[in-house]
Image 1 (cartoon, helix red, strand yellow):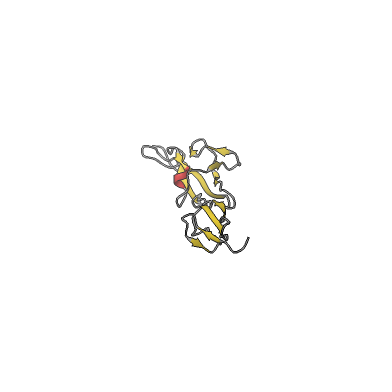
Image 2: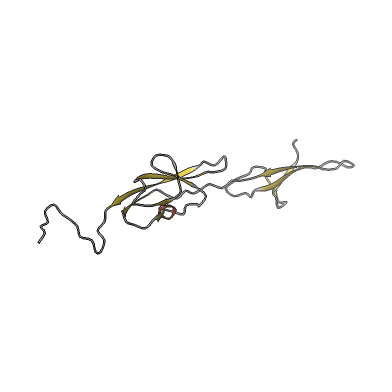
Length: 147
């Protein structure tokens, strides 16, 4: 019906066009003023505005094969949300703690599911291992001689 007025959830008048970037979620009212002795007619529209998700940014890391287990979420760039899920290089669910001595190297994907209409987003963490030299170990070279 035309001729009514839109009100924000705080009862302030507005144009009736919601900008999800700046307007609040909540119960919006549309009020049509009636002539006496009739009462005004009010309709409510409940608006929810889902937030965009943040899976962080892609990263790459090389770990020594004897490194302590890695919390993969902390290795992503940015500020990833802790609500996502990991998959391993083969696309299988992965718990999110990488053990260099036993887990496969490759690209792991962290996916944060969004509420529509926002898109679900992912970031990748590419992990490699290296048999790093650590204190107390001696590198063996094919050119080394034993005395």
